[in-house]
Image (tube, rainbow, N blue to C red):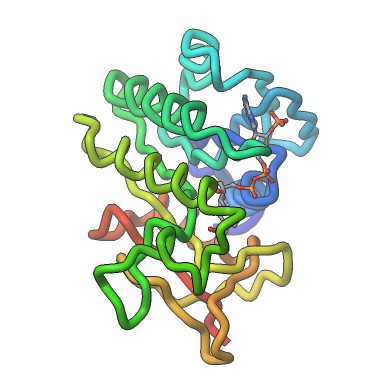
Length: 219
Ligand SMILES: NC(=O)c1ccc[n+]([C@@H]2O[C@H](COP(=O)([O-])OP(=O)(O)OC[C@H]3O[C@@H](n4cnc5c(N)ncnc54)[C@H](OP(=O)(O)O)[C@@H]3O)[C@@H](O)[C@H]2O)c1
């Protein structure tokens, strides 16, 4: 698939203006997806991208905004972390998806992963990765995953980033794992947001076996 061709698929990105969402849109457009760019103030004018202003806290508006999408990437975040908003939005998206058959890919937090070398300890509860001042952020991410696990809609997956996720280079490569935090060859648990977007689109284009998966930089 080269840029400009279309797959005929419409992918919605909730959190379109964010660090993750904006890069997911770039990757989706490059692969020929039509994109619905959802956030409160989307302003994307690229060909193939339709900005759809919506407040995710309004279920009826969200349902209308997602009309026509065959998949949705959920990449919302609030500052400060709002657990009820995150869980409520995720449940609403899953409710809508259950009725339409839409695939749901949640980009969540690294806190849902197991600690390397200590499978009983979630990253969210591990002070080596999550200092006290951000435990509420990590806990909100865990609650988001639990909401997915408890929901009857079958067609969802959760992509949990490594510990560090920041804008950077698109290498097109990454290493994929399941429920345990991964570390790159340089000893750090990290990936660029661009390569995370590659992994997100790979999952949409060719779903893997695991509902919870993670990725890390592959140097
Ligand atoms: N290492 C890690 O675990 C790690 C690191 C970074 C991010 N993440 C995760 O990745 C995901 C995306 O994070 P990010 O860094 O890309 O977030 P971000 O840059 O802060 O973007 C958040 C997005 O959410 C949208 N949003 C917030 N409230 C909304 C509402 N009420 N209605 C509609 N849209 C709303 C924002 O758009 P508007 O403000 O325009 O509405 C924005 O597009 C999150 O789940 C985050 O926890 C994980």
